[in-house]
Length: 115
Image 1 (tube, rainbow, N blue to C red):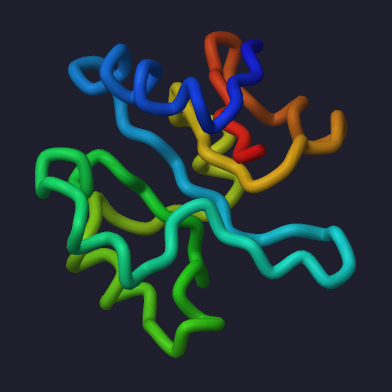
Image 2: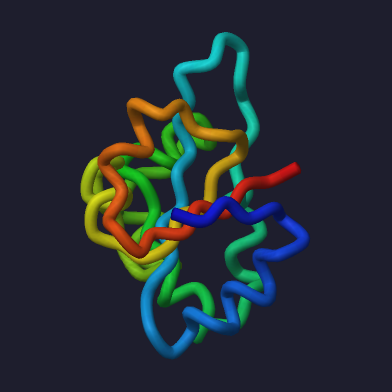
């Protein structure tokens, strides 16, 4: 499993563009953690070809008063956290994951972490 920092996201996104979707995880067990990898208002700034490859965690837009259906309309869809970690080749997080969560990732998974 690979860990990548935000500065490497663009290069990794290009690499995976033709191969896979990117999962976007917005929840955290960390107390007072309110960051998200991509603010929903910024989705429309991304080219549609990129947005359609982003699969967001279920409930991602809740704190922004957006439904899953509204996020799904602007992206590649919605999935549970477990589905994102287990089935997608790359996932974007806001912080380093705990080992017990990483164990659900697929064998060739890449975790993209914001710094």
